[in-house]
Length: 226
Image 1: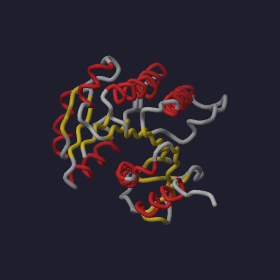
Image 2: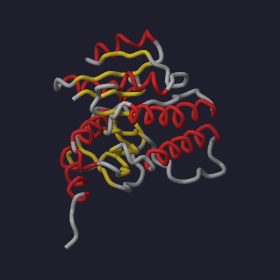
Image 3: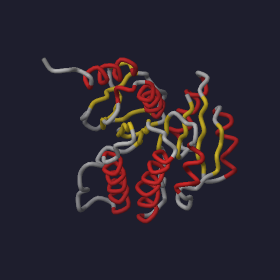
């Protein structure tokens, strides 16, 4: 399988790249800065310099040609303002989905955020509120697309603790922490299971091994009522 990851130098993306490359898959990561390339190579990924804030749909689609899956794991990051939250967390996600359709890459996974489905409270920090609104708009755009087999994943509060390999994965989980290692492991399992398409999932640490958690959701999604 060949997977192209937007935001290829992000902490979750680098972990996912290592997992994909470690089992012999091809993986490419889109990055903004050439100096990030060595980190991707070390992870086993092909670095592709492409700024999603300025690239055209045609340019991004060229990088997606021949891919089996696309993962949007980009984000404006800490220290960015309201405008960049919209430019990256919404507009770049929409552009990447447009490019996936143009390149006939059906499998598409969006890394989103808990809270993206509700209007932020008035007293929330305005930059974080803009981030959640941007993620929510990217989700809504993706749900309207009939030419993509999409999955939306909303992790809880991300940590750098070692992964446990055990999670809670459901339409609603409540808020809790989740190691980035385990987010990457869940993304890998979601990519592998075609039954997990057109669902929005929340993810936190929990008691269930990753493969079992994804398999249970996939089985539930394909159950036929009596």
